[in-house]
Image (cartoon, rainbow, N blue to C red; front, side, top):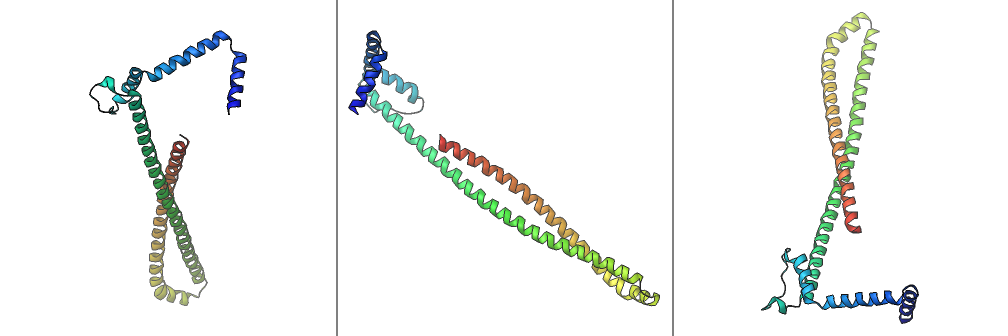
Length: 207
C-alpha cells in the first residue's frame, strides 16, 4: 500500500511544477484549518440542521460547544432517519406488491371460471335453438292429423318452457359477459398498478 501511494505521488510530481505543489500544500493547509475551525462547523450545522429541528449538545455557551461533533451527530441521526424511512417505504411497497399479485392471480382464476361457464351456457343456448329448429322442421313433414295433435298438446307447453329456458340462458350469458368485462378491466388496472409499484421499488433500490 505504501509503495502504491509512493507511486501515485511520483506520478503527480511528474505532472506538477514546484509552484503547483506549493499551491496544493496551501490548499491542504487551509482545509485542515477549516476542519479544526469550530465557527465553520457551527455555520454548517446551523445552515443544514437548525431549521430541521436538530439541537446541538447542551452547554452553557454556544462557543464552548464542539460543533464538529454536533454536526457529525446530526448527520448520523439524519442518515439513520432516512434509512428507517427507506426501509418503511420499501416494506410498504413490497406488501402492496404481494397484495396486488394475489388479487391478480384471483382475477385470472375468476376469469377462467367465467369463461368456462360462459362457454357452457352458450353451448346450451345453441343446442336449445338447434333442437327447436329441428322440431319445427320435423313437424312440417308430419301428416296433417298428427301435426294438429302436436300443435294442440305438445307445442303449447314445450314452447313456453323453451322460451323461458332460452330467456334465462340469454340473461345468464349477458350477466357473465358483463362480469367478464368488469374483471378484465379491473385486472388491467391492477396490472398497471403492479408495474408502477415495481418501478418505484426498483428506483428506491437503485437510489
